[in-house]
Image (tube, rainbow, N blue to C red):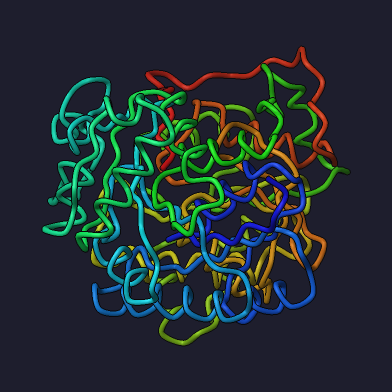
Length: 432
């Protein structure tokens, strides 16, 4: 499996995750369709386009996906893999419709067994329980019960027995569904099941839509090395000190995981600076930071000169979902204004995209990982950046990411340093 693979994702952290697991070590993540098409024109390596569709309305989402798929195919790089949220947020049915509009034959394989997210009879289970009972959706009112419901009336469930019957059985079920104008939705409860699906569809004119689980299966099929984390244990956090590469951490999520991780940062001497919402919203309205002398921003800039700093939204424990996108944009404007040449740790796909776009960055190339899904990349202007989903990771994840970047390479940081833990911290990974 040596051909170039073209993929799209619904947000930037997902795009980076896909590029990191594809296996050839040179996949490029493009933040814009023109950047993706330029890459296709000059390179034979893999490309993953961030379509940034997670927060779009249904019609706009469908149109954006259709346009991307059509233009990538016309450029000689048909989209074979589509990364969506493993909890089926972000209008998966709209994405399927957009791909179908572009002439793609879509196969849905959304399980993420590594996080206990399995698909049985077209329903999404989390550690064996219906997803609605898992408590993973926070303030979101709508919970999609599974990929069968996400795709809608055109979906056809392909049960686990067929997946385990072999590649010919999988292809026959997929072809039968497509022949009837339906979209096959495949069950899977293990990585072995996803490996069977990837192998069965290898080389077929099919577009696989799913989570990071099926992306990793495609990577394994292509000979991707087994994941080795960049931080294997408590690293030498004395790296987070003056005289080394400054690191700006931008936390755009209100999740419990991120809150605990910020507490660990603060306990280990990294200043955590909440930025008032009014400062962020004014920055969005005026397209610039007119509060550059605000005490919060001054504190962050001073901290960066002497090491590392984290910025987040003030009063993040009282989130306002209808302002989430604007606040992410505001963090991007502020981060671009104060970061200088600092390395970056960016949480959440919308926040990551906002920051990089404000810095004029259009492509990144993954170079390593702190944890699965927490990806270290090099930007097209030479900056090092870690991207990760918002609700994600072990309690030391942000600290590990900053240490990883300050180490100056993708080598493991030295072991043996002491990490101060915050109380009552959750450690379950919840990447998407």
